[in-house]
Image (tube, rainbow, N blue to C red; front, side, top):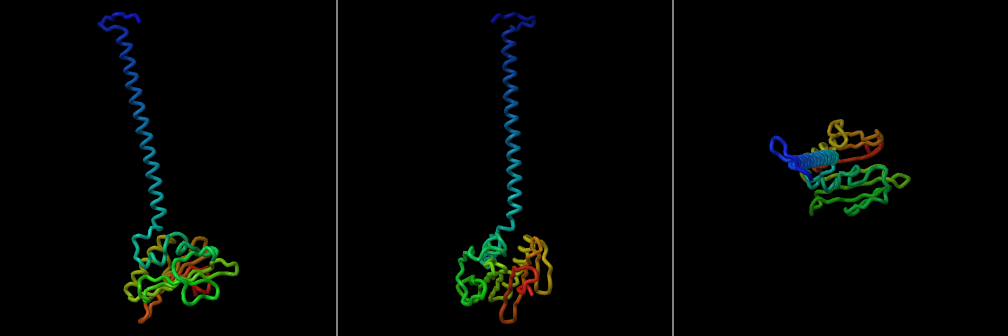
Length: 210
């Protein structure tokens, strides 16, 4: 390559090399900027997904609730214990033992909260003519009234988050579930000698809700 001396004393070849270095420098800056922008965009998308997942699964997390609450509900999926009205009866996979007495149409299981026979819940799945679940009833018996009141508060708060604000009637709260076909009832059925509460999922107008 020929070299020409410029008035300022630089050779043309040196200027050409300097221009190349300048272009290369700006190219590296541009590449770094693009990588940073893409990284920020990915982080934003990831953050949005995490936020959405957290908000939608918040109700499904039961670790902040009491032992009896978890023993009764088992999971946030379905209406209760992973099951819902309309499910086939043959999909019921209960870890709890069968209750001593069984309903004419359905199955009943007893979930014990401790080693005594004073704190437990009877979970009853009622079946229809198509062998599908048409109602779920949970009778909860706890030795101390203060524990019943605490558990009542836990369930009311949980169901309010999941189904919206329930309607309070005396010692009972009722929720209309999505679609308006099914209802949920939470009731304090405590007596002076036998503290307890009841949870019922049933079709609107069902005799279980009366």
